[in-house]
Length: 550
Image 1 (cartoon, rainbow, N blue to C red):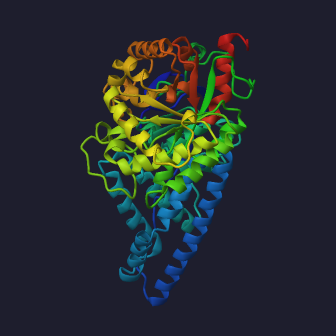
Image 2: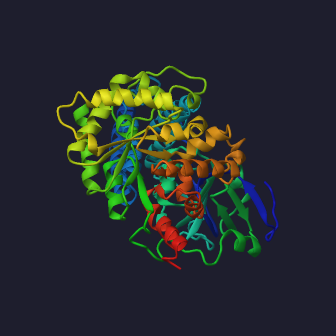
Image 3: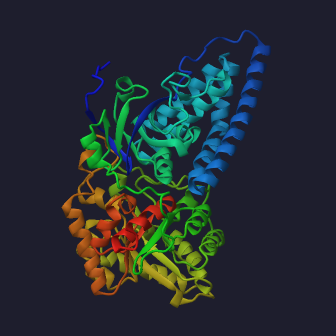
């Protein structure tokens, strides 16, 4: 164990999960208080029956618990985030998994705790070893299910290590330091009192990371061994912008990173966006649309339609898709909604679609390439969206466009699909391209002459621009949204769009990072799409930029 003097400032480098900077005292969180799993043999058939009954009761209890958590998340965070816990419930009750545990109890005569531990640990290891990053990070779901079941059986809860001790800050604002960033960990805490999160492990595309971003909690992961270095009550500063944590930060450092005049979301809420600017919402579900409407978003700048597909066991039909999209438009009460066409590939596979294994899926069959290779899926979705045009203005966004010829090909297929409909209003349909591949920026003028609008996906853009896997802790320091090349590219794109009278928005993470909205406005991008919870803060920053709020 590393010993550090009580007043020594020390910097730790990790991977940024969610932006924001905060200083506070630490509470250590243990996700594995039941690491010692009891293991023994069952002596007779009666003992086997009792274990099976315990298993049935435990599944029922934990299923109900996950339902309660999902509803809490749905009301307090959003529908997309709530689906995380619904999915965990389905995995936990999967017939194959359940039968595997039962087989251990019945045929191996092992007690329930050891059977659950062995079966789910094997599942977790299997998922963790997969090449596909999305599936690999789903291993954390298996781990959370295992901990939940064992916690129920042992009556031991995960939680704050220092709870009950004199220096425990369990009832005060705190920064949580834990081994792994998990969705269950976040929701078991009183998130209103959590200032920041620091963990040793946990991918930035994991469920927990999604929730942390939705809640607006500054978060850093990938600081290995920090649980052995830090202790409850330590003074730390979390820099979620740069993926860093400072132990015993100096007052000079605090003044530089966290200015005193910093305004929080709750201090002031500007209800209207300054003229010529828009603060839009990112969303993936009807609940997200309702939340966006409730906080006064100027519209939805990015509705991720693939979430609808990923929830299903089979391809949703045209009528099913139309029903969902229509409800989203209704929830936004006439404000614009931009629907991104199915963005599958990379870290987002479809559970019902067998896709060929790729050595590097981020550079493979995804985005517009996938759509062009699946014409039936493309045309079905376009028809469902175009049907909205009889009642609403609909904006259709095509992901991962690489050049103008690819755009023309996608647009031709989309128009062919629309013309098969009996009823639609062509004047109410707009088509836009997503700029996230450097080659598209080099053909920006040609593309903008063809499209109605553009949207920048900054997350993938930074990844492709600097050849950097942002989830790789070894190279995360090069995932740098401060790099002047990025801002030169954004300024050039917005200038090209303005010269042709075409609007351009940005929907990546940097749109919601503190200080970045102003920089984007200076770069000529005046439409920012962010998580609904970040809208008040982004709008405040825009208002200060224009002098509306001093």
